[in-house]
Amino acid sequence: MKGDLATDVLKGVSRSFYLTLRLLPGPMRHGASLGYLLARTSDTITDTTLVPVADRLALLDAYGAAVAGTGTTPAWPSHLLAAAEPKEIVLLERSAEVLAALDQTPEAEKALIREVLEIIVSGQRLDLERFSAATPAEPVSLPDDDTVEDYAWRVAGCVGAFWTKLGFLTLGERYSTAPMEELLEKGISYGKGLQLVNILRDLPRDLAAGRCYLPVDEPWDRKALLECHARWVEKAQAWVGEGRHYARTLPIRRLRAATVLPALLAEETLAKLQGARWADLERRVKVPRKRVYALLWKAFLRN
Image (cartoon, rainbow, N blue to C red; front, side):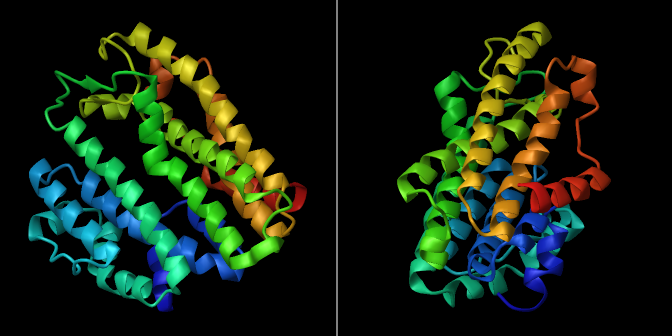
């Protein structure tokens, strides 16, 4: 991936994850960065709520076909571009270049990227369908724990599997001292944990849009929400902890730092979420930029 796609465009649509990608060893960086830009594009389609759900579903299907190589880059409608954030507009406008970079990627690497994007898009599509009738006055919640875990797998757990497969593909035996089968399981748990942190942090904001990713019978019952929230904080801590175990098997310092950094950030967030009151959640827990860089140094020097 050439030019400013790998720098300015990537940095514009990511916050801390850009630091993770820049730390990666060269052989892994292209596939991981390209996969992120592709997933970030489909995420922009999904999350631009001013565009009707039916239109977003159609665009998501068209984009998924373009990524799979069975379709062409969609012509983005003016109402999508008008509703997106400025940096997301840049990404959408450069999507043909991103897809061209995918087409030029070596076949084995390209297959991994297409595999993970297919899973991610399936999760985003389910998300749109599930919450199509949701409103702030009549929110919709996920029905059970299995559905929460399935969603976390589709939009993030599969990324842990992709990261593992990409590492072994591009770095071979230098990637890890552990076997791929062991790391696949840990990587999936790690990815699900990171997504769960987002769900737990964004609970009030999602609920204000009519979406509740926690399995409660009455999404407007704050006591039930906070009890469920506390239970899933514990689950997230366990899953994120798998990321630390995963990183310890990686002998290359840059790779180990890149892999553990999201866990360090997630742990900081989870510490603030543990025992949080509703008012605390409404203020939206966020790791300050200064602290992000401190954790970056910790990841590089101590892990």
